Length: 206
Image 1 (spheres, one colour):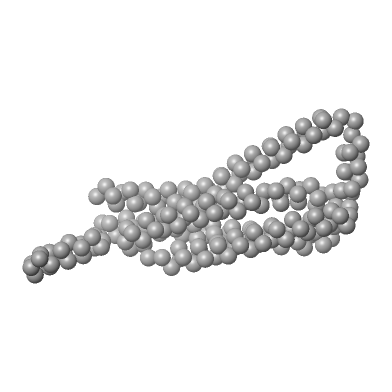
Image 2: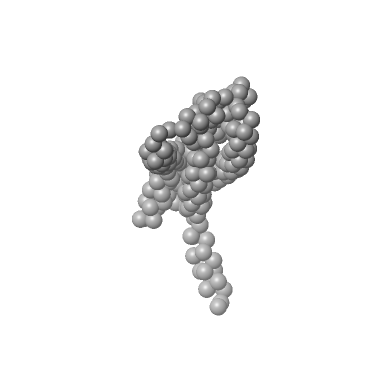
């Protein structure tokens, strides 16, 4: 390869990273959905932080039966650890997209996949917290009356009917919460990821 060939190859390689003004304008249009995602990350951080602290503090004023108190705090520690893990992931993701430079297509691709990855992590962690949420819904309202309610349930005349009703309620809870998680993830992150993807697709067409 002579000098002209080397220079030509270098120029061709260099041109791949050059952003034309029209493309730059489109790349910058991705800033709006990214700003929305940043705001939603802040909201999610505060919601989860407030939620886990509220449950912990509120439970101090509930007179649980000792057995159910132990069960409650085991579940609480489990959900607390998961929530803290999620908040750490959320914080680092926020910092990453806050500092990212989207002046090139490669960076925009990377940002898009990071958003999609975080969206899936968000869903998985939300699914992991579903059982804890159900236990809170049962134990917190009942408080010290939990044992009495359990005795009434055990003495029910038609245990099979009660069992079926419990299974139906549990399934309905899981299904409704699944849809709620999907809708929330889409509203907070998914729809803005689609806007970023639309910018990427427009750049491909040129």
